[in-house]
Amino acid sequence: MKYVDEFRNSKSARRLVEDIRRTATRRWVLMEVCGGQTHSLLRHGIEEELRDTVELIHGPGCPVCVTPADDINFAQQLALRDGVTLASFGDMLRVPGNQRSLLDVRTEGGRVRIVYSPLDAVALAQKNPDQHVVFFAVGFETTAPATALAALQACELGLNNFSLLVSHVRVQPAMKALMTAPGNRVEGFLAAGHVCTITGFDSYREFVERFRIPVVVTGFEPIDLLEGIRDCIQHLEAGHAVVANQYERSVRRDGNEFAQNAVNRVYQIEDCPWRGFGVIPDGGYRLRTEFEQFDTRARFPFDECRVIASNEKTDCPAADVLAGRLRPNECPHFGTRCAPDSPLGAPMVSSEGACAAYFRYRTTTPEKMPQNSSVSPEEAAT
Ligand code: SF4
Image (cartoon, rainbow, N blue to C red; front, side, top):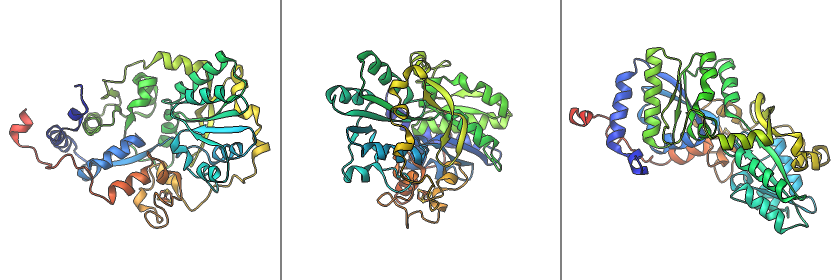
């Protein structure tokens, strides 16, 4: 399979839907971890189509949604300091801290630049020696290698006007936190394919042995997701607690060793706060002491900049949405006080947020791929 059309083929999709219905003897509860998967499930009407057969709980895999408000507040204060330029990905600009977003701060005169890669921020620092460029480094294991490379490149160039405000988080510790949370109902996981492209699927072996639950590493196209659901249900029905790899075209057992080496060289694993979750053991990365010169927190002590109280807004129950305890459309503010144009919380802002996905695809007709849920015997045989 080479082209994306093959992963959106309606005939294959209908066959998979039928397979899933045939296999499931009861309604299983699965969690898709990644926000990109949530969007695809809703966009293509898969969640709706399989509603009677499988309950899909949406996981915390939206990186900007789980970035702590304190880090956003800090970034805002940095952007307002003389001689500092704050650079980040576009998604991060609209996410509110406690009171406002980086976009608001830019309107107030703060120096905020959108970049498409951390290396663009390094180049910005090279071109502007009179400015200190801070790259707001957010995201999961997928983006950490690129920011690690930025630190290594800045080191090689001897840049003294570049640093990283590191807010990287790690997916698997959050999955452990979910599994040990009171009232957890997750019976199987669709793990995020792009994260496993870096970490490798073998990284889930200990998780699976500890929690006795199947984990299927899954891609993002409709056929990927349907195969991931089918495989997960097959393992559940057979009582298998295994790691399976649906996303073979991208994920290998040991992952991307080059990326892992860059991350290990620059970062160390630490307990880390997740927005809505609190501190998660081993939940994120921090720069190693050898790279302290590129650590924004060491260059600009947080307390100097911290002028906004760190109490979270309580109006937005994002914590419950991120932990899968509340569906976005069950939130009392969904579509009324909270919409993409006037978001109360990060899950409505981010392009990977579950609330944004519900708003976008639950209020419009999804791109329904399985147009007819029944498969003829001829089709099933092909
Ligand atoms: S709909 Fe808005 S207020 Fe409700 S959880 Fe989502 S982001 Fe928060």
